[in-house]
Image (cartoon, rainbow, N blue to C red; front, side):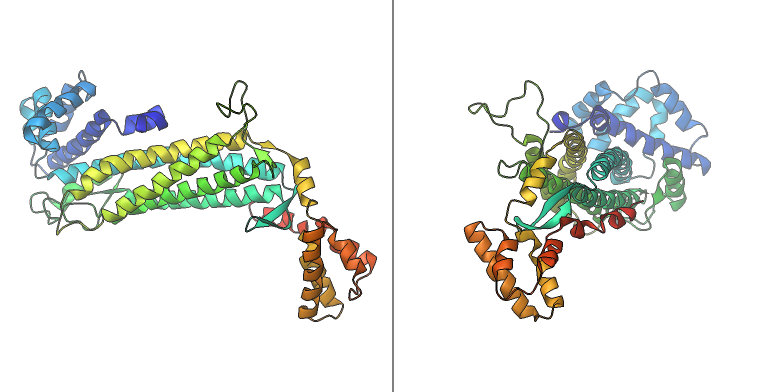
Length: 433
């Protein structure tokens, strides 16, 4: 999945070679910390780096680790043995006092941080696209819909301003999740620092730009990872929210907007006229996968005692896939928004299509202001509205003919003016600077 949906940058982050390079960075940071404490000969980490410069931890190294893991049945043991083959005698200082998860969890957090940074770049690009549409269509009238039914006038730009605000919240959630996962752990087999003093962890964290996790057992607690996955799942749901709106607007009966349709593109193998919202539908589908992966992350939180490895196999799937899908879906929606085809005239026609029914609340309030009880005013407007639904007559004409109506023609004209509904649009926009 990751190869199909991700950028080269994201694919590199989750490659085996980069994973081992991240392990190496943790191991060498720990070696340097031991050097500072006088437990390892000074310069050991630097000499190891120099020996690896001609032969970096590339795909060939990853293949060797895989070969050794088939024998050892343990990834860190295979990694350290492959490293020893390249480094020689000084490799004996690698992994001093550490347990496997010290390295794996800390390195994985480094990778997650990089992945979230890429996604945050994608999110900001989507924000820019949504904001541009919000500004362009700030004063373009359209009908608002509740329960899928015509409600009252609004502007097309308000839809995108609403989406823009949601994606801003997604950015905030992702930033918080990045902070939550931005921790280092080198506390040993059960979190007691028995074989590696807290000073080593502190120095490693500082070197890697992380902060020490205040308390661990043999793992970084998986509620941290669940929070990352939650932020990604909510982002996916936001993307689907926008995608569903586009899918509805592209329906033949609505046709107020649609995805761009490229030259040479086809919509159906059997119906040449079809132009389908395939990108938006794709985004809706990927959001389901992202939400499903959150469930798996939540299941990972409750581990046995100080650690088991039931979470490990799950994370090898859900972390690369979900970060890759979040990036891909965000970028794909950005392309849809940037290329969106908008039919303002269809919006005007739809606004006027249902016999003035969208102005019923304004009429209701004016009747109340004229002295009718709310119940009497509601019954009057509802009666005429239901007739309008059934006959196709305009609500205003029906109200004018109703003997119980106490509004003048001028007052009715005022009630059916869409501009009245849009008078605070600029004030709403001003909240966003």
